[in-house]
Image (cartoon, rainbow over the protein chains, first blue to last red):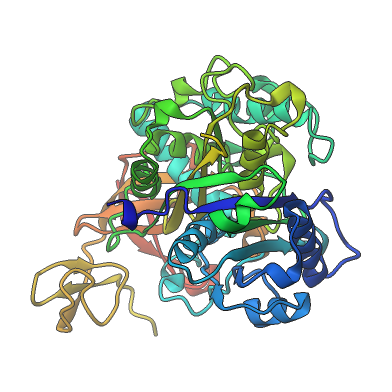
Length: 391
Length: 114
């Protein structure tokens, strides 16, 4: 059993989130190079130490080939898994597995883009997808329309309310006050959220994440490499990932692929949701995070609405401090993909380097959960359990 | 002339109604697939009233996007039309209809059943 796990076989030794949220003056390649080099510097490593490259379809050109050459890397392991905003969490899981097998020692995982400057949505070209003729002609022109279908059914089945969803945004905004780089730093109330313009019932403008330029990178290394670095590292303890489709046209939109990725990650780490000190949860919309909390087992299915009330998500002393950087709802959703930014805040928490007012005391165990695609049709999930060096 | 039918597919091997249409069965892998017209009766599984949209839909708001569950089983994405968006609700019986060509691209849509 112990041979068949990534538990404590790999460590996040470097991390960097681009400080800017609007970057009209740099190319995507330049943004990705900035965060890649800064993450290596954070680790105390050089480009020549890297032997594996991980990126998704936001890498320009021929993905990993173009960027590895641009950065001057010589790689013996390459992974370009594309699962939308969850990609980077999968990359870390895959990197840990490759490191555990001895296929590489230092993996660089990079993302970045600038949808804000380009004023356009980003992501894979759907024009050739087999489902496209059966999904796009009816006016689902934005991702929010799809997620709204899931939110409406969740409300119908479980009695979830707009005011409960708003609690997710309120907590994010209170955290973002302490993040000087956050795109939105003004606290909002539940009333502010439910009185903001309705975009697609039942989701309001303030139920939606920010659209930002930016990027981020992490460096994952073997125990042998991590040991000789002076910087505090974060152990990869467990990983799970999954994809959920419509199931031959019979979608149940009230749950996500987290019902599979979560248990796999917790089992590999040998911990349970009750052991978690801090959570970074994908929050492209308030409903995204609320459903993930349920599906990861932080509360009973359908009880997410009551779970997030009463300041449960607030650092440092809430029941489950979540997204202390301000999340995608307030801080950053670079390239419309939040997985990397969420993961980097979990690294900060486990290193004890989060903003002082939101640092979770004695933070030993964190969950990072990402999703990608669209909840009401087909979506991905990836879950990581990360631990403090000594956890 | 377009035929005003919503065509479904059924697997001849395992009798599964397939959605969206494809030349094989995603349940059993069978390649013997027969097409047949939907009855046109459905109920609303979930919906949203779109109030902000892009492209050709930008000036059509508010409009209703819904998953409707067909009598044959599949849940299909569509619009609910010919009613006040505020009247749409989950569980509502709806019936298949088609746009007239001057009114749009001739898509299958649904309206409240009478």
